[in-house]
Image (cartoon, rainbow, N blue to C red):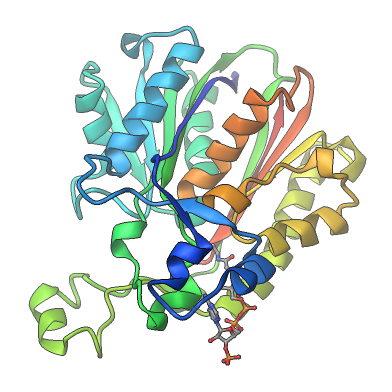
Length: 334
Ligand code: ACO
């Protein structure tokens, strides 16, 4: 029996910055509304003509993470890739990473858990390392939202939130069971799937049917009941963080760094207040990247680490909530 620990982190954000004012030229919205409701000032959207995709961005972040781990692509035993915006309906992005990084024919698994995707993905990787099946696992979260959003006023309640980007980490075996990933906690409540979903294209509503409906009856854009999602998010975030603390005999004061999924700054601030944490104990970067879904936690974790905000021995808590509904946490002793 082993623990797993993170030994390399990397991120990649497209260069193209889209401000709230830029969005107000496409739809009836404004900087004041977006900042007040979400905290977002700008996000990155892949520019037309760029070769970036979820898999391409994931590969760029992965190279950095592998390098920082002091490993090479040949040391990686398994790939876990979390995204809701894969390059293809199938196959998944994981196999593209195996090819793009010219890795040996190792296994590659895609995780479809939206905003909780990265936390679910490291939980999967952690189990493979705990049992001794694999030693080094590459975990990626990446999203290419911008090409799939409704950029008219009809879509403004969803479109202003989301951004593109990728993050990656390398997990390896840790023999000291008091270090590394101490526990992960995963939940779902599928009865609320329709509160935040992309209904089609799907096998039930395939492309010709959508074209015939001219986008009116069967939407191919994301739908979100924002207020319902918000209310559930604040409850589930709190529960799943508390569950992790209790499992490890920790108190709120023991949290050195909380990395919440960057869904909405107001959600993160609510959680911060509820747990009595200072600004130094919570890392947020939604103001500059928006909600990058499965990439958000790993991008924020990478930046917090790059900024020197995470030290050896710190208790780092990752927490996420999103479409499904799914929610998850990970308690890490860095
Ligand atoms: N600009 C201007 N006005 C807008 C915009 C916009 N971009 N979007 C909506 N409005 C209007 C609405 O039409 C509405 O107008 P009305 O009162 O005249 O009807 C008004 O603003 C209020 O709309 P609400 O949807 O009630 O606004 P709310 O305060 O709930 O904020 C938001 C919306 C930001 C989406 C919020 O509900 C939220 O963040 N929800 C949670 C999102 C989340 O956590 N998602 C989970 C992760 S995502 C994933 O898993 C894929």
